[in-house]
Amino acid sequence: MATAVSSTPARPAGDGPRAEAACPAPPLVVVAKIKSALRIVQADAHARRLGLRPGLTLADARARVPHLILADEDQRADLALCDHIADWCDRYTPLVGLDGEDGLQLDITGCAHLFGGEAELRDDLMARLAAQGFTALSAIADTPDAARAVARHGRGGLVPSGQEKDAVRPLPVAALGLEGQSLRALTRAGLTTIGDLASRPRAPLAARFGADLVNRLARTLGEAQHPISPRRPVPELIATRRFAEPIALMDTVLATLRGLGRELEAMLAERGAGGRHFEASLYRADGAIRRVRIETGRPLRDAAIVMKLLSERIAALADPIDPGFGFDMIRLDVLAAETMTTVQSGLDGRQRDTESLADLIDRLSVRYGQARVLRFTPENSHVPERMARLVPAIAPGGRPDKSGMAWLQDLAGGGLAGDPPAQPFCLFDPPQPIETLAEVPDGPPLRFLWRRVMHEIAAAEGPERIAPEWWREAEGALTRDYFRVEDRNGHRFWLFREGLYAVEIKHPRWFLHGLFA
Image 1 (tube, rainbow, N blue to C red):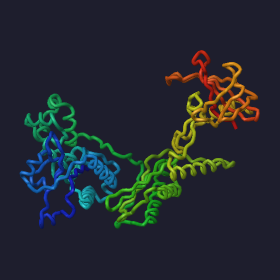
Image 2: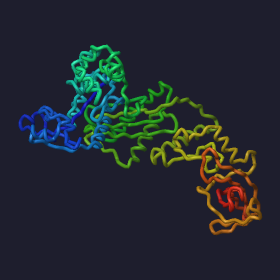
Image 3: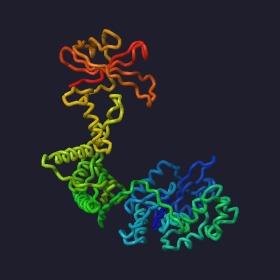
Image 4: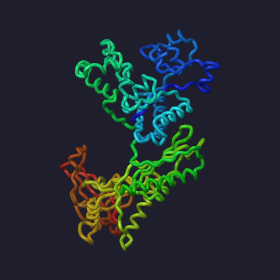
């Protein structure tokens, strides 16, 4: 079951049926420059009753109705407003898609009973839009295309199930969503209504006008389904609480979220899963929406932990939540879930320490943001600065597998127990240039100058040759020879010579890449 909503510009403040009867306000039209002339692109209900339609030039409109209220078209603002209305319609169903520049499509399958039925849902939607100052037409049908056709080119309303054909047959062929050459070709052929097309064999229509026309016709007649493309990720689980009177106290909001968290906990436990992404949506009575999202590094379903993270996130918001006239609906969603297995705690207590660390990472990520809580994860590269990269600590990539951890341990331990580390964990990025003195061009340095301090080499080990990664095709990449050196004061350094002498470069350069503990 789908709902199509088509909106038009709102009337000026204070305008309505009673005000129009007492003192009719001038009609409102939105104009834009099209083909070197100012033309109407949108018109309110009053203007349409007077015959002012989109496409009419402003000169002709003024000749018919001298007193007009004009507004310049602002496509960016119109799209932003349409997005805002689409977010607001999320209160009825999570499946909300855009339909052109001034329409929306809602898949209300399984949601209508929450409002008392399809007619009650439509009445509530239209009443709330009217209260916000919007003029809209809506229709409910079994297929999105049928609802769209009845809303945009008919009188709207509720189309009984299975009667889409009778509802759309009198509508013009433009209700199929055709434009330009296809629409003109149908009109010239005398096919002006959907009924004219429906009475013709489909094969000749497809041969003459294309398969797209036949597909659109089948969807509009209710013979085929075309799913709505939702704007936002569809939640895996939803818990909703509506209020007869809006609530404005944050304590009540938090208490409501705790109750919704317990509902989700039961749903997740039934599935044997845990949530990774949670989102709380607060719907204000005036149409504003505030969303608070949290992500965790492991699957969770404990309502107390989820509520603690939500409280941390709300407290850390740069823009505090303003209840305004109050919230009339609160929703808590699970946007992503994973299978959750119960792990038995060992006698050594390490499992508890792991859970405590995960809780700490989640709290820090929620409070300060994922981009500020990072960890290293290994990469398959033999170039030292590319062997690891920083990722958010709660991201899946921030949890290296056992093979990756073993690879890092082998690298740090030199391969055998008790061996000195092959590479230091403290690396300079980028490597720092140094001045050296060596006995032979390919040998280790005798001394080097770094940060205006001379270091005399007492012992050196190497070289360890690392060639450039040929698959990266980096221009100017040179071979590196690494040395582990120790000065007379016992300080250990990791140096490398860039470039092979007399082969790749005439004068190789030396760099300090890391420090050993």
